Amino acid sequence: MSRPESFRTWWSSFVRTCSTPAFPSAPITALQAVDLWRRHFEQSGVTEPGHSSRYILAHLLGAKTMGCLDQKKLSHFLTQEETERMWTLCSRRLSRMPVQYVIEEWDFRDVTLKMRPPVFIPRPETEELVELVLTDLLKERDSGPKVCLEVGCGSGAISLSLLKKIPELTAVALDQSRDAVDLTRENALKLSLQDRLQLHHLDVIKDADAVLRVCGRVSAVVSNPPYLYSEEMAALDPEILRFEDPAALDGGADGLSVIRQILTLAPRVLCERGRVYLEVNPRHLGLVQRWAEENPAELSYMETRHDISGRPRFCILQKEESKDQEMDLD
Image (cartoon, rainbow, N blue to C red; front, side):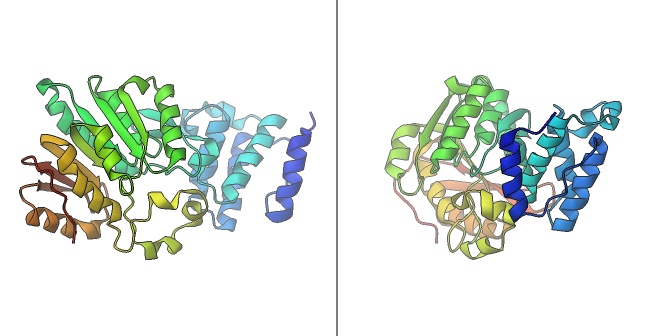
C-alpha cells in the first residue's frame, strides 16, 4: 500500500525543516517503533522521551497505555497505515508539541478530555485541588444544592470532574480565552454534563461587573489561576512557550494579578460559609495569608494544603459574613 499523496506532501515539507528518523523501508513491530522514537527523542532533547513514545503508540493502537495492550500485539508488525500515523504523531512531538495535544485527549481523574492548543493542559496537582473541593462538598451535600464557580476553566477539567462526582451540583465556569470556553463546551457535551454547566467567555479582571451578574450566589470558588511571574515566562520549556496560552500562565509582575481579583470578588459571590480554593505558587502563600489577616471580616484563611511533592500549594479561605465593598491585595 503506497502512502497517500497528502502524507507525501506533508512528509517532504517536514523533512526539509526537521531531522526525523528515516521512514522504515521494511515493516517494524510496535516495540521497535517505540524504541526507535524513544532514542530519537532523547537525541533531540525532547523531554520524557520514553513516556512520549509509549503514549503515542498506545493511542495509535486504541489503548490508554502500553500496559493495557496484549503483549503479543506489541510484537506484531505495524501496518503501513499505522506506521505512517506513528511517524506523523511522533514528528509532532519532535516539534515539542505536548503529547496531550499530539494524541488530542488526556485523562483527568475519572474523565477523558479533548485537548488542543492553545488551551491550558491540566497538571497532576490540579487533580489534588479537585479532591480538596470534592471532599468538602460531599460532606455538605445534605445541606442543599451546591453551585461552584470556576475561574479560568481551560479544558473544563475542574468543573467537569466535580459535576461528574456530584449529580446535584451545578457549576458556572468562565475563561478569558474563547478557545478554552469552546473546548470546555465540547468536553461537557462529550460527558453529557452540559445541562449543569453555565459557560461564559469573560475575563475576571476586565469583566468584573459581568462576572458578578452571571454568578449569583455560589457555594465555592475554585481556581488554578495563572500564577507565574512575568519574568519567568521566557524560561519555560518549548512545549509550553510554543503551544500553550501564555495568559493561562502569566500572573503579572508579582504573579498575583488574577489571584488578587479572585480574592476581591469572592466575598461578593459566595454564600455564607462558602469557600475559596486556590492552587498557587508556594511563594504566594504568605501574601494570601496576610491579605486574609488584614480583611478578617471578608475571608478567613482556613488552611494550607501540600501537594504530592510536599510543596505548600493550595489555599483554602472561607467567607464569614457578607460584605460588598471591594478590597485590594497589597
